[in-house]
Structures are given as C-alpha cells and as structure tokens.
Length: 388
Image 1 (tube, rainbow, N blue to C red):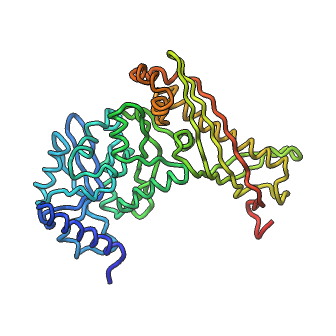
Image 2 (tube, rainbow, N blue to C red):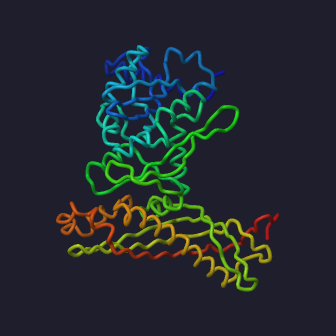
Image 3 (cartoon, helix red, strand yellow):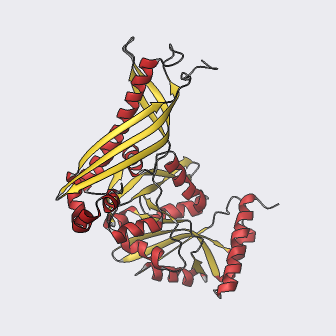
C-alpha cells in the first residue's frame, strides 16, 4: 500500500510529466526533481547543493528514505555548478518545484546577491521558494538532510511559517529578498538553520536565529526577543506567546504569568522635514493569561489586571526598543518598512532624500505607544488541577 508521502511524490512527478510533455523539455527520466537547493561561495567558486528525487529510482524508495538524495558540485557560477551536477549524474536539475533556497552564512556575510541571482533570474526557478541561511554551510545542512532523512523541504518552509504565526521567526521568500535588493526601500531578515544532533548519529534541522541584512550583506544575528520586535513593528506578527512578571503588593513576591497575545496591530505614522524624521508607532493587542503561579488567587481582580496590562506593555516595549536599537540605530537597517511608509506618507520628502535614508535612519526620532487589553476570564494556576 502506498504511503501518504509516496502518493504526494507520485502526484508531483505526474505533474512534471505533463509539464515536460507540453513544453518540450527533457523527459522525466533525465531530470532530477529539486526539493531544496543551497549555495556556498568561496574564492569565486560556487558550490551548489541539492536534495532531489530521481524519478526512475522512486519505486525503490520506502517511506523512510523518500525525502530525496543529495547531490553537490562546484563551478565559477551557480549555473555552471548545476551543469556539472548534470555531467556527474546524467540528469538535469529541475527547479520549478523547489521549496527552499539555503545560503551559507559565510557567503551571506560577504554578499548574498551573486548566490541569489540564479534563483531570481533562471526561468525555471520559483520566486516564492522560502529563503534560509545555514549556520555553517548550505552543503553541510543539506547533506545532513539528505543522508539522515530530515524533514522534507515543504515541511521546512512550514517550520518557518509556523514560527512567524507564533511570533518567533521570520518568513522570507526569494522574491521578497530580491525586491529589497532592487528597490533599496527596505532591508530584510532571514531565518538561520542549524543541524541539531538528536542521538543515535542522527540530526534534525532547527531554527537557531535570525539574520539581519543591510543591502546584500548579513550584518547581525538577532535573538528571539529582537526578532519579535521586528515582527511586531513590521506588522508581520498577529499572535505571540509572551512571558512577563507581575509584582504582588501584598506578599512582595514577583509572580510569573504566561500570556497568549492576539490581534496584534501596529500603526506607523511618519513625518519628515529636512534631515529630521519622526516615526510614531502604535501597537495594540489582546492578551489572554494562559499560565501563572499565583496559587493563592483564583482570578485577577482589577488591581491585578491593571498590573498585568502594564507588565505586558512594558515587555512589548522592551522587545520593540531592542529591535530598533540593533537594526536602526546600530546598523542603519530598515527591516521594518519605514522607508516604504515615508514613500507613501511623505512622498515629496522621500523623492529628495531617498538616497540618504540609511544615513538618516539611526538618528530618527522614535516614539512607541503600546496598549494591551487583558481578556476577562479565569486563569489556571501553574500546577493546579481542574478549574479554579
């Protein structure tokens, strides 16, 4: 009986057959169906790594090893490296179904433009493929994924999307990064992946941070708090889990509370005159307490609710401030989209000062207002059983 995974692969290959028949491309048995691709560059030599399916070998695969094989080759360009993979395998890489593009961190620190160019210009590549950085090299990451049967590329993209939905990770597509490099109105961030040993000689891919780019170069690694700040300010976060602390006036203790933030909304108002830019941020959200250690208290009273709202607002303010400090003030980077806001809200000023935006950004006057509304309802004490 076919497994669900094998059925999905069969449907994918069937689609490729139809596409090849209509377009006059190479027959399927002379193709490798690329699922994820990675690029490393050193000394002008580009190494292309791919995890791909070989159609004529599919029947020999089982559910456990159906995630694809690993192939790697080098050349003076990504295009040449792809051609050399063809010469060593007898099959030409087929990119329309590629789900992920991974760039080695050392390559990104020197400049991502050349490595990314192939995936934005080659007619078979998908601009909607998810973009990642490998903590070490893309070859090491994808080789581990190919040999150890790590999560398929589709699930890899879902990992980043889920992190974005939870307010803990960015999600960036190849097209988004390419657009930022082209128009210069905004910088971008990319998730960083690493291999984590799980025992038994196996490894799994995990999200280990966020890479901040200034133009085409990676300039900083953001931690989770700073990543959350970027997501909040840019309006990319709709939900988020947040832990905060509330002082108990009666006992003098500091009590921990876990909150589920919902309906996060960020409004950005920009104004500019000469070299002076003012950016006002208004953040609003609902917060539902999900866990707490106030064992002596069944529900929050008005005083406790007010204290919790204040604590939540302060936590969000801190994350926003950290993100603005590292990205805007320290590196002059704009992953928040302030430049595009200025282009809409102060178009005449933007046309005049667009070329100087990165120099002006660190000295912008930022004001931040956060309003958090605690949802009514009971709270379940940590460790308690049943309902309070």
